[in-house]
Image 1: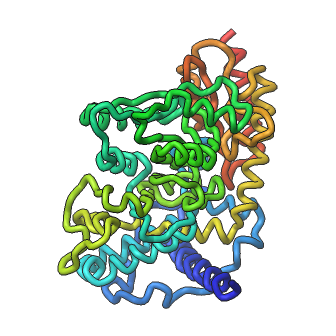
Image 2 (image 1 turned 45 degrees about the vertical axis):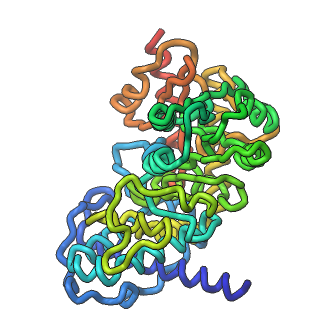
Image 3 (image 1 turned 120 degrees about the horizontal axis):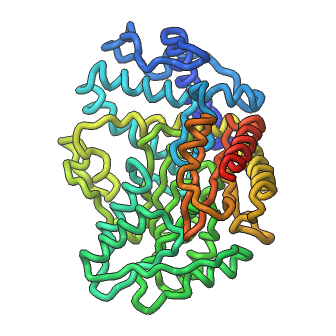
Amino acid sequence: MATAATGQRLATAATLRLATAATNTLKAANADYSGNYKNSLPRPANCGENPPLHSFLDEVPPLASASDTAIASQFAIRPDTIYLNHGSFGISPDPVRAARRQWIERLDCQPMDFYVREFETHWNDAIERLAEFVGTAAANLAFVENATFGMNVVADSFPLSTGDEVLTNHHEYGAVQRIWERACGRQGARVVVARLPDVFESTEQVVKAVFQPASSRTRLLVVSHITSPTALIMPVREICEEANRRGIAVCIDGPHAPAHVPLNIDNLGCRLYTASCHKWLSAPLGSGFLYVHPEYHVVVEPQLKSWGRLLPNLPLQWFEEFIWSGTRDPSAYLAIPTAIAFHQSAGLERFRDKVYSMTTETTRRLVELTGKPPIGCGPRDWYGAMAHVPLPDGDHRGLQDRLWREHRIEVPIIDFDGRWYIRVSHHWYTTTDHIDRLINALQYLSAARR
């Protein structure tokens, strides 16, 4: 165990050294106002020499010893913005942005060498790091652009026949509902939508509601790990246990889970899991993964058919079909290990303690302001990094735009099930001042409505 732990620390340190060195280069060459940096890069002096990735790196101090403020400073957010929507589009810290640009430079300087001689090795290394992080074997994972892309792969691959049913619930992401409506329509199956309780009080109550409309024709259950419109952490392990008892396969829609909550996919009992890495893990936009249980390796295949691997290699396993889909920029995927290293160095439990605590306080203040309790209550912790509270009765469709135009606050205002809600995301860079300004803005706009 000591050897494995040491190896992980060395891998994390190496990844951070690469990213930090690249960050320092970017900052020196592209300094802009208020700590933000231009996207342009000078032509690297070593372009074409193809040096070893770690040959020029210096040691960097571990983030575990850094203050919250120092860690927050790694996120270059536009200075006119209070960003409370990490749950939709995450912002990458400087080391991750720099690592991605380093991969792009490595590709752009000599694409033939990169694609033919390096690409698969780097791809497989990144998959290995991700597999360790999410708790499964690398042979069960494939990179996809995001959770929606992965869900489309599942919908196009999962075997359905006339009369079969796919079970979802009314808290699922709207795009996922559309994906399965189309897939079922093509195969003569149908989507059945479970109605979940208005107030979440216990795991048993929610699990019972999820399966209430299940039947002998139910072939697949699609459920979120953390719901998008309502920010609720679903009891997915218990849901999978009940589904397995009934002989129903489970596909978990997990874009909000990686880094947000502890994740060990093999222990959940699902057959399929799709996620985005650009949200709470803060990897680059356009990075995600699809998990496929060995039972379904022979079933799942990409929507986009190409060589699978670059010739003369041929795909022999299911995940190899996803490696080469044509000429593309893989830098978002290859920077995922840097995002993992960033969080591990700063401390995942420390991160969760910070954001969960902020969610509790933000929820309290929003409830005090609106007089409306959240959907999740009772002994279970239904919320993680996102506060989610109903707004006062009325039409709030213009509120999100006004919060941005008049107060420079980015926060989603969500119309769900006939009511309006506010969903506030917290991350390393979120401060109590940001929440103060949100509360003050809501008070001002509420008074202006009267």
